[in-house]
Length: 51
Image (cartoon, rainbow, N blue to C red):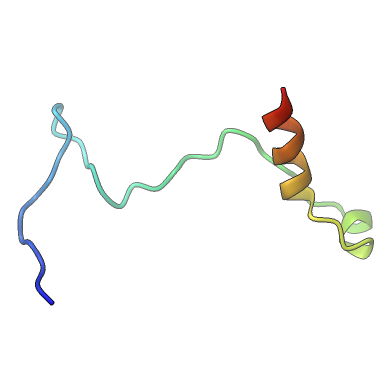
């Protein structure tokens, strides 16, 4: 296995790798949802995807 030692940046010089994805929808998990074993994050994402 080999790795490149090259630094890769965007055109403006900002980082290209290891920056992750920023959150644009915040979901507050509630105790009732956890007790009912609901996936509140998935449900919220599904509803938003339909919009």
